[in-house]
Amino acid sequence: MFSQASEYALRALTVLAQNEDHQWMLAQDLAGCLGVRVHYLAKVLQTLARKGILESQRGRAGGFRLARKPEAITLWEIVLELDDVRRLEGCVMGEDVCADETACPLHTLWKEIRTRFKDKLQGTTLLNLAQFPRALTGASACQCADRLLPGHALICKEAAAAAEESRANDAGDR
Image (cartoon, rainbow, N blue to C red):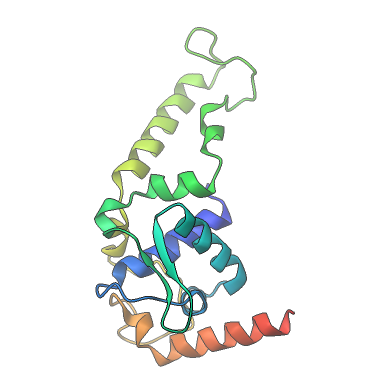
């Protein structure tokens, strides 16, 4: 349903929302925690920083953090910056003209699904994701008993090792 950019953004921003101290997190550490490529994630995060969803700061003491409180950032706001959501407004069957008056066979169904989907994204915040009872980060490298606790990736040696491995893999790609 979402592009890879939106998927990575939602996962990374969930980790940042779980960071109760609002500490800066490096893209490479987030990538290691999520098990994704650091260069692609960094581009996604930079896009969100330019749009004011994230703050960014260069250097080892820098990285990314949320620009606002997690309860003030909706999933719709994130996806809107990364995906072409205008596609949702088009006809699901590809008709040039599809409106209530000139409906295709799936118009009513698609209109209902589209409206519910958009309403859910607009009504769901990063705080909602951060409070979800299981980890959304996909940090499969970590098998610690505490891996589901918010902020765990900040202190986990296994997550740090996964981040280091990701950095080494990215260096080998050059």
